[in-house]
Amino acid sequence: MEPSASDDEVQNLQHRRDPYVNKKTVAAALSTVALAASLSACSSGEAATESASTTSCTNKIVHADAPKVSVWAWYPNMAKVVDNFNNSHTDVQVCWTVAGQGAPEYAKFQTAIQAGKGAPDVIMLEADQLTGFELQNALVDLSPYGAADVKKNFSDGSWKDVSQGGSVYAIPVDGGPMAMIYRKDVLDKYGIKPPTTWAEYETAAQKVKDAGGPAFGDLGSNVPAALTALMAQKGAVPFTYDLADQKKISIQLDSQPAKDVLNYWAGLVKKGLVGTQDQFTTDYISGMVGGKYATYVSAAWAPGYLTGSGVGKGKEKGTFAVAALPQWDASNPVSVNWGGSTFAVTSQAGDKKLAAEVAKGLYADDASLTDGWKTQTIFPLNQNVLRSAAFINNRVDFFSGQTANKDIYIPAENSYKGFSYSPFTVYYYAQLQAETVKINSGKVTGDEAASELQNTMVNYAKSQGFTVN
Image (cartoon, rainbow, N blue to C red):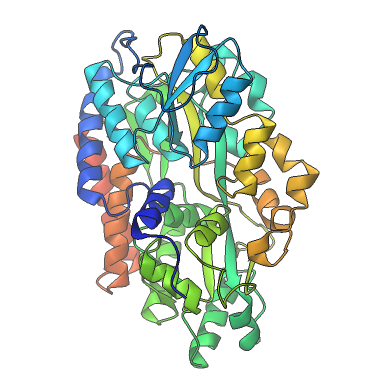
């Protein structure tokens, strides 16, 4: 059975989670333009307040006399979310536009920042992109606008991802606590229990290979965010950055934990225990359907992506299950996150207080959140959902009725501690992707890749005016 999703649909899903995949040149150029302007803009005055037009809404305005707030967002069920908001608010209406998914939207936002006009009032941004825009004074600190009122709705880790010191620059919506999806039929055939540690993972992979079985997993070069998360699980802190000291950054991409993770996966590749197929492609999906991979190390949104791409609907239906992410130290488990989006208020918002109300309230009502998780459009971060009996006890069809939320994903999300992102995520991902290609082709070891990555990023940061610790 071939996956039912078209190539375009697969690409859209791909960009939702790792928006710079296969856009290396464009991404690097965008990052350079952004950073070249950002440091010089740090001390500039108030940004222009001409926000994107609210005359070209793609949704229905229910209360025409109410003030309108323009929103850029690409969630698949956004039309329903906007209607839910507009139907329940007489004081404000959302004017929604899709300005692109991931990179295309960010490029348009960057153009608007440089022009001082054309940005929306509220914008959907992935958490790992916030710092770069914060540095340019492109986003509004929401703490004076009641951000604390909704802080209780989120875990400490997800709130840390949108915060800098005492400032809050976005409201979380969805996330990606990581776990290990696996083929029950493959593991059962070879008498393997789901590995709980990375050492067990390698042992199981070797056992399957020795018996003539499929690859145990995959190291796609096009998922740098996932690989970064796995480095963080080992204890790596690739970047430390604080807006309070805007021109200083710590870069530790060649730390021992980072090297350990890159060496581990490089070793699996060299031994032929895992594949090197780029993920989110029709070839990769065909492999999932055909049992080419025993496991898929991914995030809580993966079941929705896989079913949307046709996985689990043919003879492989009922063969998938999920287990907690393997650990380096089973006695000290660490949860990490891949993906996740937020709503931020831009500095060009005409009415920042009203825009903040939209950022806090959009995709926060019960109807929208329920639709989001039931259709597997998002993995919600709102604790009102994570604590609800319906979500906790939901038996996931893709996992043959397994209570995956209760057993795997909710504990992972609530124990996630957050992450320190750099101001140049775009460029970093492109460089990590390039190093992973070299690892997969056997041109470099994990140690060498880490050293090259460190040197590249340090030189880049210095070229953009940063002092590197």
